[in-house]
Each structure stands twice: as C-alpha cells, then as structure tokens.
Image (cartoon, rainbow, N blue to C red; front, side, top):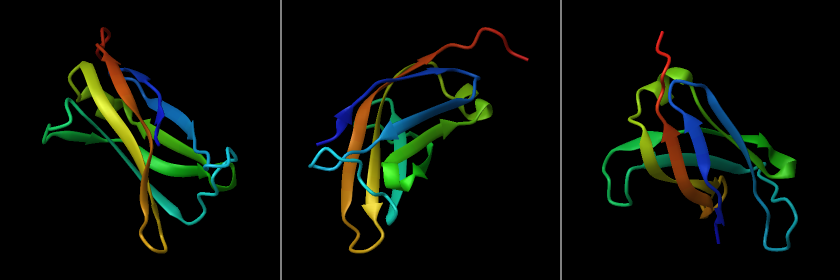
Length: 112
C-alpha cells in the first residue's frame, strides 16, 4: 500500500522532495535495482500529465527524490492536483505504487 503524503509547490520555484520507501517489514527498501516514475494530474481521468524528475536518491536507504525545475513549475496552472510515485524492478518488471497524495501548487506573484 502506498504512503499518503501531500506536496506543496510554489509556482515558478525550484521544487525538490525526498520520499522514503519502506518494505513490508518496516525497514528501508533497497532500491538498487529499481527505476522510479512520478506524475501529477488534475484528476484520475485527466489525459494531461506533468512529470516529476524522479530518481533513486539513496538506494540502500530507500530514498527517492522528486523535483521540478523552476521553468517547469512556472508552466503549470496553480491549483490542486493528484500525484503518485511508482517503482519498477529492473529484473522481473514488478511495479508498485509507493507514494500518492495531493499536490498544492500555489500561484507565483513575482515574475521576472
């Protein structure tokens, strides 16, 4: 089951967050042989998706980094979105959702 966690992003700013993944035993999941993907959408059925740059940050500690460049966050309309994070095993292709929740994108005031 995925961990529920909300993300708060300032439009026009660089965003970065670290997500910790734990196995069923409660210990950090070794992500050495996994790839990771993450997207946000306005609704579950939305055909428009915005991809986070999602990477394994610290494989042995089960840490994933999600990020958006300032130009990318600036191009997204402020509002409420849904997101999830999926990992896929490099061997066997087993896929699991490890995090999900809301993204709150607050409007940018200062524009350069």
